[in-house]
Length: 460
Image (cartoon, rainbow, N blue to C red):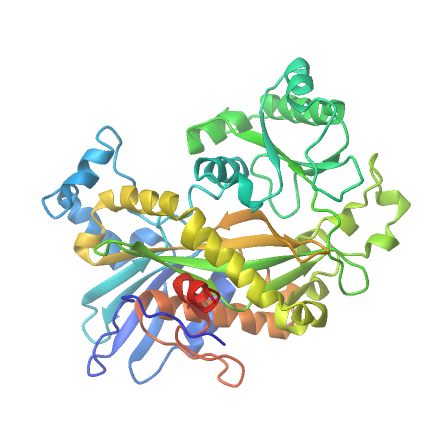
């Protein structure tokens, strides 16, 4: 197992000063954090208290009263001038953030420092269409990081669809089927994935979706779905037409799968590198519900695809406990040395290929004055990957602030994995170790590997 590179992580308080945590977590992670909180009392960590809202956190109250620090001389001149007409981003963590933490003195509740999961690091790769743009902007097209993709407007006409797509869909070498994947803007958990074989299929799906959402309005706001997206994102979303990853590697009796790995970005704005990027070395395998060869005729679409056999997000199946595994427990992937391949792929992606975009976004996000009052920032992303029969790893999508499955939807070993992951996130971002399940996991940051370490270990 590779060791992590210790690149200026937060330093824990002296052992003579007992500490306690306050935290606000998104609702899908609440059950995980309850277990972590139960494990937290140690010689140095007194307790962990959940707060119902980020606004209740001591650090947010301090930041709100110290708003005048924004753009003071402590903020470098080139950062102030880079975005002169842009309003400073909001400082308060949103509930969609996986977790934000305050570290306080146990006896006095005096604020020491905070770690907020609000970094802008992954904002350029979160949405499906933005991921395509970022890879293009970073000139990654020739690297085969993601399958060939085409962006399609939300409201494109039939003529535009015909001209843009033509008779040839995006396709990978070796794929003999004229089928591509059409991804709905902001679809999640396997929803909004369509298999198409012609520009007519594509237009019909997009037009049907547009009509449905143009007429759908909320009783409270009166806004259509598109209006709400524009208000939230500041732009009109695009569909993504992407080559199907085929022939895909099949495992566990002929089932398709994808790998979910977690990446955590920790800002260090006083350093030229701006950010440290870590890969979590316990990777998840998410299986399709049924083998490809067992497709049911009742589930097959016009392209001959059974969604239960081709959608690998575990939430789309009926036996989700069995659909989620850990990579080290899947012999077919261990034999192919897939852990090393996955970690190298992710390290190259975020440590090299899109690093300029990540750094730029972190600098922009620093304009809220959080650093000046002792608030460090980080971001968590779930990276979904798929593997071909020839062991080529492709990026499917990146999920900022990924959600945890319900507690009753996972097996015990997977439950331990999630608890260990959150404990390691806390250790990585605060420097305070919580050591869960010592017979299974190692505490601290040992399960996070710096991208620099991975790249160095694979340089020979």
